[in-house]
Image 1 (cartoon, rainbow, N blue to C red):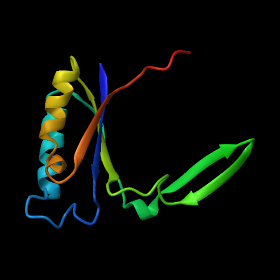
Image 2 (tube, rainbow, N blue to C red):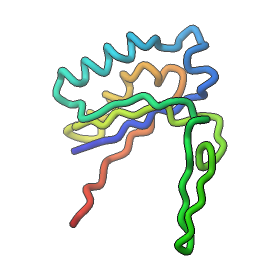
Image 3 (tube, helix red, strand yellow):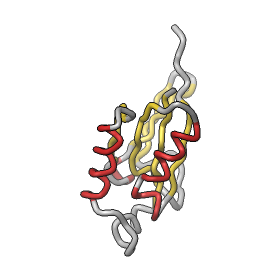
Image 4 (cartoon, rainbow, N blue to C red):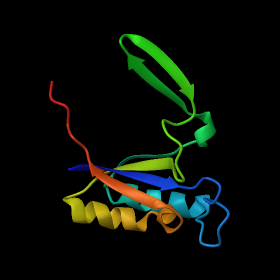
Length: 114
């Protein structure tokens, strides 16, 4: 089953705390998950100031700079993994280095039906 591990953190603290992971540690963990055959995709995201939110209401499109809502933590990246079950996905999420300074939301992926 596919699981999406969404990595959230306060961007201002992500690289500024003593327990903050370095890019090399994040890459090493991603490589380990990839080498285990469980990694489907993973990416870090650029800062939230680069985001654009798109809404369509009544056929009209509106664009807003930034994220949908202001929050204390921002979406910093994701891992899309293949896991036997939720417990295995949670164990993968537990190992994501950024979890030490933020949080990781784990959600099963719902396959779209044609």
